[in-house]
Image (cartoon, rainbow, N blue to C red; front, side):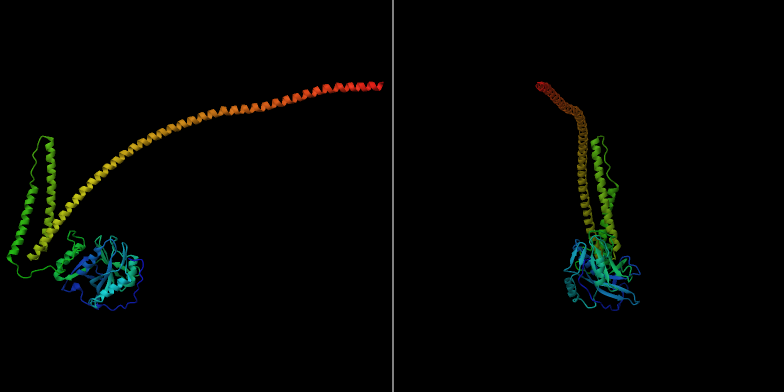
Length: 452
């Protein structure tokens, strides 16, 4: 996926597909379907080594998206039915990618072009692949942009690998406007017929039917060739060795079974402490029996697989038995490590539960303190209300005193006014009493002088 691509291809001339025999019709090849390919979809045949290389590339870094191109051919069979054959792959370098994006750059195409020139001319680019670490298998809008601009021929295909979820799927063009591409229901892995066993085992792992420590996606066989098979006569000692090993395994299983079905009964004791000890010992023996039973089941499964795959060649059977025994041992060690991790997690959970109980106890104490504080707050509010009432009662007499003082002040001014008026009247009367007799005397004197 990418946000932008500044590389554009010109119009490509699409040649008519070459007529060729399909791998599933060629006895030289072993062909095994992956998932369930449908009859009506485009058959896609992928070489085992090419698929292994792309799967290993996907596991190189699951933190970002990786990708590359697929090489091979686009053909038709003798009945005119098209099919695609992927025989090699080129990993993209100098790319730009993140957890959710993958971008082809000019340097990427230059590198792919240089490497492509070192291959035969008939080996053409038939599609591209990239990873979706823990995102699932689908084509995003940006993936469709790459398909539209770089791999837009009718028989071009795209492969998406999710290495985290161990899922992968091919996408083909449909020619339908509403659904231009669709995921195929499956594809085919192809290898030499001498590698049938290796091919079957790889497909089994890819489909998730067996999940053991020897996942072939994580390590390529050192030689990359089919298992060595001796087609000549077999020495007698090899057959005897195989039978002896199987006999020893059978005896070992019988001894374990006898031990399991005839456990030693604990001796009863009247003392409680000894009863508890005996019960603990019985529990420990039961756990040991269960563990051995699991080991027996694993060994039986290994033996069943080995016997089922035995084709009469002791060398191959010895090698397969050794490999499966090693895988079973690694599996048991992994189970024990897992059980130890579970016990550690149980202890951690118990500690966390204890801390949780302590936190709940502190929470209950805090709730009690909060209740006491609220009760005290209510008491303080009641006291405050009483004080407010007393203050209101005291404010009323103060208002009466203020009114009395105001009335007294007004009365005082009225008295002063009356006294002033009375004084003025007295003064007027005194003046009048003094002036009027004198004027009458003067008038009488004047009248007397006139008479004289």
